[in-house]
Length: 260
Length: 358
Image 1 (cartoon, chains in turn orange, blue):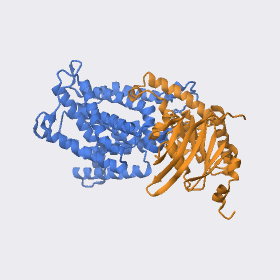
Image 2: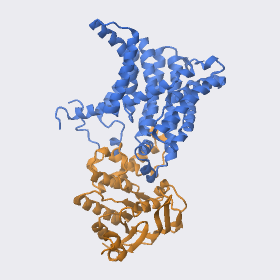
Image 3: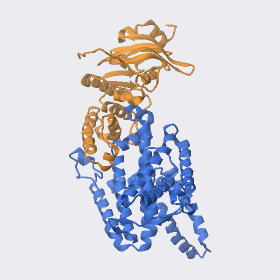
């Protein structure tokens, strides 16, 4: 697999995030290059999810700068991240439980739809055409993730592993240039993990999507990611290719304790 | 064996996305509409039109409005009757003050006025959720009724705010028989129900449901929470407003502010709870159930009492009605939170497999 890793597209500089007196992130800098798989690891409570929330605008850091494609990003709202082609999945599945798999994935394309509610009510012209065009795209994602058999099932009835996959489908439906995955393999069995790894690699390979991933399974992280950043207590303790990080003293200390 | 989708293959997404993908459903709906438009006007008596069918359709429309807001967009509201009042008074004022305005246009304007008021009272929903929002919409309920009583201009200076609606002129023809009024209400309700169904199956509806089910995920996907919630308030109030205008013009003929009480708001809420939260058909089932149950009890209870030789008075009937309503609402909340519409859906799923259980 010869992958072309491009320039830096997301650059985070000296990010600090506090909730009242609690310091969630302290002075963290790292960057993400185009087309790479970037992993964020660290013990529980290290600030990994907060980091993702900073990237897509759910949290606003008190200090630091974020550059997206070279431009400094102003204070942003979550829906603006979607418009900038950043999609994400959540640690605890955040699907729309009352809707079918198909509707959930269709929702992922919402920023690409132009028709308004009056056109929808009359099911007229643009509304009808858009619905069909986007259905086509959504079906491609469904094929890609091999979930054809459940497309009309309400997501609440699906097993955990499939729900995770539907959530990935919803994120992919937006055709993101950057995909943030918050523990995509948590709570899965070996087989499901293998499937998920395959999908992540395929997404990266076929669509060239940049992936930022949080994961606890070290085997997976070391195998699939191009570069890894390690957080502990809201501070960055390691950054580099998997082999480098594996042999980093601070990282070993954080994971295995000071005794080693 | 009748209800089967076997052999109905969909070869295009257009065919798969149509309103009623199963052929039997389509036939059923056409038959139902034919009965409603052609059969009923020939068969039903005047009492049926003015006491049962017209109020049923009007309340179904109001329940539909509330269902859009509460069932689809997940914003609990206790102000439906107030928005109906806005619609009723607005339609009256447009008829009164705008020279030669057609009745249908003033109904639309009434809906739009209600939508504007709905957006205003929907603003708190941007910060508060659930019960707290319900309390905020309760303010709408009391404030609007107070306004209509307080400002005589709104009721053209009539005493205690009572208004008598103008004649119903449609294309130069006066609608004065119950049958004509029934057909007008039916057409409007069918058209608006179709619009609601289309909205909830497209992007608008998906955005509402996404906000209802998981608002953080919805905003990360790119749904802007504020416009989405306010649109739900606007559309919902528009439906309630038109229902209110029809309530005044086609059902009662003369209304007062106190008629649009909190009790009526609750009645509409009960309709969607019993009928089915988040279901267009549920709004109709719920309205039918709530309106027909008292009539059924009125007839059935004295009969059974007579059968067992028990003493009976009309007061007992109304007491039993309240008991039955309370029990039913508790029953539905506990056993089937998705209401009659869900029961109907389960029945259809069973029927599809019948007579084989798997």
